[in-house]
Length: 347
Image 1: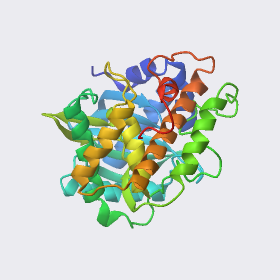
Image 2 (image 1 turned 90 degrees about the vertical axis):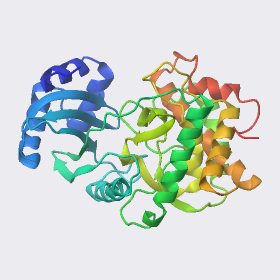
Image 3 (image 1 turned 90 degrees about the horizontal axis):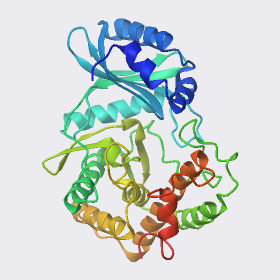
Image 4 (image 1 turned 30 degrees about the vertical axis):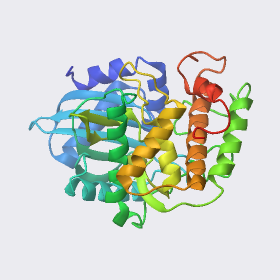
């Protein structure tokens, strides 16, 4: 439904978690003040006023799908600048590098939004501007055909981005390299220190998995570190759009594959289970192997399994931070961890 920006923001900011995130990213929860800043940005940087709002969302960044008065549809995302030890290391340099890679991929035909403007300062935040691409739909990735399509697209990205992996400025993957058990969580909703009680069992699994994932290095590649259904759109059993390009990272291929295998079916936008089964993790990896054109050794498979398990443990820890008394357990990553029979997610 199309609304004006103030109406859309007012509705979104009725939700407490959105207010927390807005304050963290934009230093404001006032829909009028935020609207004024966005409208001024569009007039100054794009030369066209805002006509309507298609989308407002808050997570790692504050996102706005807008229709300009000349009819163009654009996607603005305000990013909070972060320190190097955060899970998402965000700066003007890292986002500029991401935009350059994204532009290259779009030109080569990979399904991603076009970059409209290089990153710009936006108060304390950084604003990126892409084309607004409302194509395809989310489809249940527990369906083997859809799972295979997501694995194929992930392999294609790794292959397409290979010449760009040495591009300076891209964030290095932080999930497995932090000196503490977990990196600084990815947004203001999660306070691991204050919610440590009751999470000891998650931390034990995370520690074992992280040590195994760090045991040796795979090939360094450039890939998407949040390869989950919420960021994918499909049509005719093919991925036709990938969002959230600030998740682009240089990392060990085995680690990135572990993240993707653990989260490929995850979305809260359609009625589907957010976690994969042990078998689905394995099958995603084997499908990736086929599309990537390489076969992993048993040692490499164990590292992928450890990376997937650690990813699920990190996500379970985020869930625990929001639900420290065990609420919303059914279908959660916490439940998935408990239901692992032994060891990691791939035997």
